[in-house]
Amino acid sequence: MNTKLTLTIEQTVIEKAKKYAKDNERSLSDLIENYLKALTKESDVNDDVELTPVVKSLKGSFTAPKNFDYKKELANRLSEKYL
Image 1 (tube, rainbow, N blue to C red):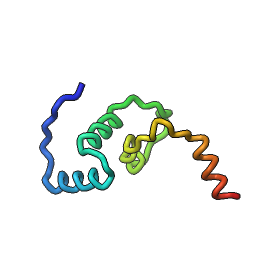
Image 2: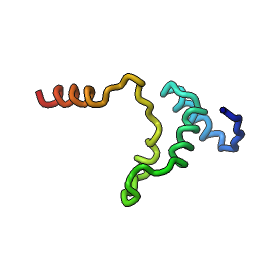
Image 3: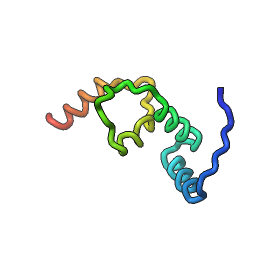
């Protein structure tokens, strides 16, 4: 269930975020929701591993298509690189 949320954010940050969302064909709500999910998600990674700020900022920002075959894509890329 979606619920409306009101935030108070600096105008320049909002403008930059809207441009980023538009450039990446996503909604601002989607970006914020995924960011909050990433912040509040239980860690599946070993707690001994500390993620860098860049990795943390990217976490949750990409959603693969439902029919994406990781192993096949990896094999194709490696074949292109080495063959």
